[in-house]
Length: 211
Image 1: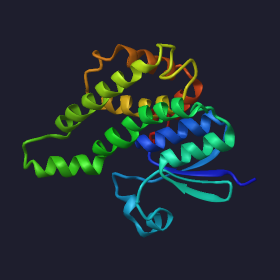
Image 2: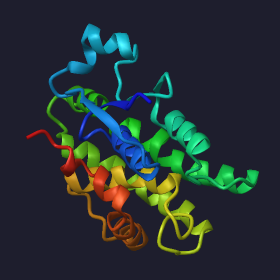
Image 3: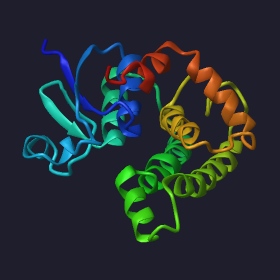
């Protein structure tokens, strides 16, 4: 069987999600880094792989997949990861929780979006100002949505799920930009549970930073 190939960037939140899921699934993969800072995602070579110019891209099972949430759904369905409940109402609520990070918060904090916003401010904002404005708003909403589930170690139960996979990269970004996380004690407990899990530890950006 051909080894899976992951086109990623070590600090990319969406790539971080996929590294977690691939490790949870026990899937060995070849990492092909795409240097976003150097603009490698805009080269003809990468655009031929993903016309959107994004990472991650996953080649697996004879297919090439883009969009992290779609790839996570594929891995969940084909590898039985149990990232989402089967009951439709519970499933919809968990998906909404995860999407509050991956669909609403993450795009605003995407480096290209933040750089554009900061640039438009004509010196009125720095990158950290942008991040420290938007990240707490998103985490506060996530924390309220999280109240639907009992405090059981991970976001929606006693094992990692889709929401944890989306939350951890955002907490990494929050720490990178010196966001005060003290107002979110439950998120800090979830972060500790995830950090102690081998799949999350193996996927951490520090483990994939270029030498």
